[in-house]
Image 1 (spheres, chains in turn green, cyan):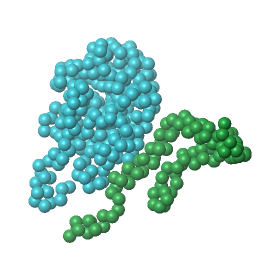
Image 2 (tube, one colour):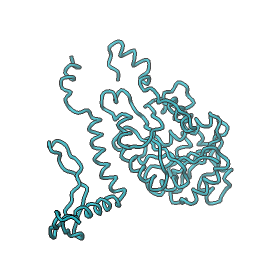
Image 3 (cartoon, chains in turn cyan, red):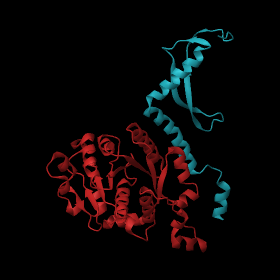
Image 4 (tube, chains in turn purple, cyan):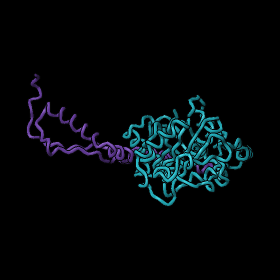
Length: 96
Length: 266
């Protein structure tokens, strides 16, 4: 009988899934701390791509690895947040 | 030329010393010449796990400072030929030695031994840096807990930064009953997260505590399930292909009987 009740109420995620989810998140942060070059690499690649289309202010550009709520609002997920000040648009349609 | 293997984990209490003692003893039983180095200066424990605490005269700091010769500090195991322990100093701290001295020490031991196993202290500071300095390979010990896996991940990153490539993972103290009911991360879960190759899984086994009480590593106990796991890892270290232990057997006869008769296993 007790087992039956347990079975019916077992809609919750198992605790190991919670553990795994939390670990994955914390490791994203830890790992980015281990290699500070990582964000720099991402940053320079992003600048390269965006500069094809617009003039941006490289000095005040800011890219961070952070956390945010998922679309369904139930979980916290990692997010890459970039603040890229635009100085002006290039004519993207004009090819070289 | 001998191989220098460091056993490390980041987090304390996950079983580095027990692993070092068991793998070292296992290798010696297989006829290899092995030396175990305790680098946990100030908090030595490998001596008691090996049951050799009463034989210590000199320690690693004495060797490095030239108080004695290396041979004088090596303690011969009481049961197995070819097995030696170089104990840590108890009244000094991690700064008593430096990485270059460890490299020199390991190089000196290489010509004499097949395997040099280094028991690394917890943490990522001086003691860790000393322990990994002379190592060719690394074994990372973790348990299926968030804190231990997180620290293992950090250690893997640091090992790679110090040019110790492809560390191999030992998952210690896994409980199959908890994995089955979804309350413990499985082998696959942990490998998925850490993304390194596995060298073995050691089930949670009370025989480990009993064998530590006696100062006789469980690897020589044919009835211990964890001992069997350590024997398998020993063979893998020597390059053999050995399938992973079937953890389902770990439940033991008693709990199987209980299940059979409808009791819930603990």
